[in-house]
Image (tube, rainbow, N blue to C red; front, side, top):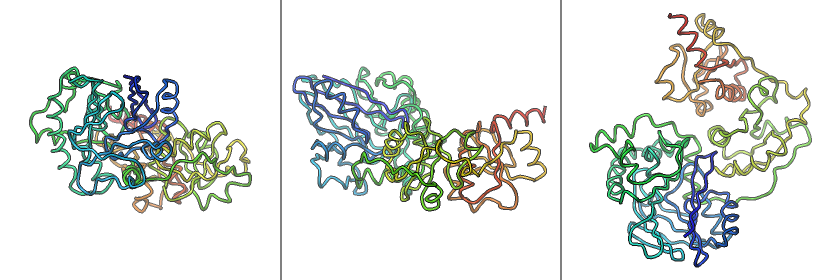
Length: 463
């Protein structure tokens, strides 16, 4: 048997290829939309990918199941659990098999057994892996059910998809599913769908794999026997889900067009000619953006968090123009496509922009300057951190609006005085300043060093 682990660090998303080396067949569990890495490994190992399997309708990335099925005629093994709201709708034109708890299917001499594990979502299933004629499973692909050190959150349907009343139901289902998990042999390996950094849980570990026995001994969720206490703990302090999760649920349920390799149009004329009608994203670092940028552009630095923040801040129904280097263009397109942002239509090498076009700026203030102005009510302090950070400690005169919710809540902000914006250290607040400028707030200040610097000043004032 062949088993290979794939990991997208930008989305903290894991997928797996299982192959039978005797027959040359292989299956991919929870494939990402960019299927090239799987094809490359399969070719290198002399395998042919004949199937894919999904643990559930994903909320944080576009599944590659349709790419495989429509391009390579693979079979898709998909959950038939859950009610009518959680059935796959894109399957009519692909070869597929709907599976339920206890069903088994083979890829060559390798067997996968379906285990219904609701809680994260109603239709969620896991796959127990049996090698050849073994009667005991080698491992379990848990998707968003059990992670290393954590379990899947039950509130995404309510928080991200707006389906009311599902959090409590999901938490109770998760408690029952974990009882089945704990009944598995301790030696069974655990292969989760996410690692540290994913918003699908609140305390995911960075170690890629585990075992049932180790999770029973160390995972907080598997230690708890009181259902009410478990539900309270599971539903408390979950991170706020990105805006794009609701869109991902829809496209992974209903379907999405195949990816295209077509490059965005290189804009040779002044980019300002299109910036009023489409979203323009400047991928430079925040300090470079601060010192001069094209009016109407949003600053999302091209780093490890680019995909997540693009999902938070961009409109899926509008064209996108990207300011980047030529070397970054293809990777940016692939990253945007990984979460369904397919309308990347224009591209500009920001190094070619004339200095005269970079006419908009903003300023940094030190924490001392910002707090002194706030005390005199000369500025309005805006905290763009998440709720967990805010609840831990915050400046009493600040208002908190999560960076990803600024566009929806802009009417709550004053227009009679400057906005002084901070996050934890200064990275998110720079993106926030750029977004506020596009929303019409032109007198915006970034607090350099964020709340960390502010806390130092506040502590000095009280000592």
